[in-house]
Amino acid sequence: KNNLLDVITSIIGIFGGLSVGLKLFFILILRSSEKISNNLSFIAMKTVIKNLFICYNQQQMITRLQIFFLTISLYCIFLYSTYTTQLITVEINKPTYSTYQTLSLNYSQSLQCFCSDISIPYKSFLTIKPRFHDLCSSQFVSQDWINYLYGEGNLIYRYSFTDFRASAVGQFQLLTSLCEISQETINTSLVQLLTSDYNDRQLLS
Image (cartoon, helix red, strand yellow):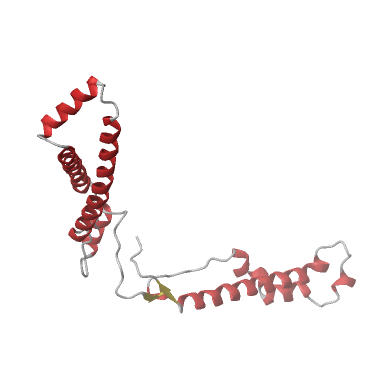
């Protein structure tokens, strides 16, 4: 953000630095040029510069050149300040949702919308209904089905080792346990999530 104090401070600093630098620069130029006294082109150029700035001695010439270049420098600073993009912050208290949508559309890169409440329970805006495999709700994981397979017991003696029915009871019992564990784990995680809070300072887009 540019303000008047920053501009004035910058101008004073630049003015002081340029004043000293330009003065030394022109002194060196003029002293070096004095050694070439027989150079007619330099004498002619020096005469033109003196006539242009109405200078009658070396000190006046240095002063006028300083003023000229400082004026050009200040003009460049003015142009830079004029065409430099300035950041303006506008605060809108409690905007409506339609206002937020308009601002978000026009100023998506710089818009910041802070929430009055930074914490909100997940259960107030989130609903989760888990879906398990159909097998976990079928008769194949019910106790009636396992009892039916087990029958009178002694399956090893009733069926051969390669017969599926000899090991079916154990496999379906394992499947039942896996379904129960998965359902219990997911339901517990959902309870923990929905009873916790979501924290954020800014509005979600």
